[in-house]
Image (cartoon, rainbow, N blue to C red):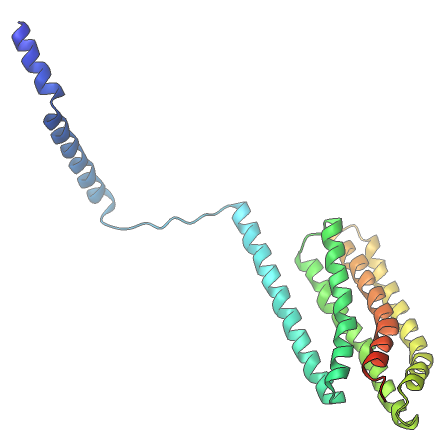
Length: 221
């Protein structure tokens, strides 16, 4: 009896037998998979609310980058066509870039996320701010020849003649966007106060920083 039990145990626990059984089971499983699914490769893709949110955020950020890039490119071409001066171009871009940076910093500090309603702030505010800059520079260019190319005197006269109208226009625009702050919808409320903030900083930059840049770059005249 002991000899038969030992022989049976050796057959069961023999390594070669175990490997043979394992290989046979694997072949059966593979054959079953091939017969059930066929020899096709499947690709796994992640999905769900988190993935959709991340893709939407990435799409919004890329759209914001492209819109600002194209806006500054078109503004650059218009400025070069109107004034034909790289120094004037530099003076016009800096006061309009700073308000956008400040607004983006405030959004991150307060915790306002990038959404379709908040992304509009940059494009709208940039368009209004560059309008203020063009108005100031056009008036400056018109008065420069009458003042025998005296830059300092021309800048002072431009501030006195154009600065007040720019200030009034900005106040009206800011008041119009402030109305959105009383909305019950969060996106509209953020659009209102962030656009107003951008216009305030843009007005200050165009009335303070822009004349200072002109005096700095053209002080030899």
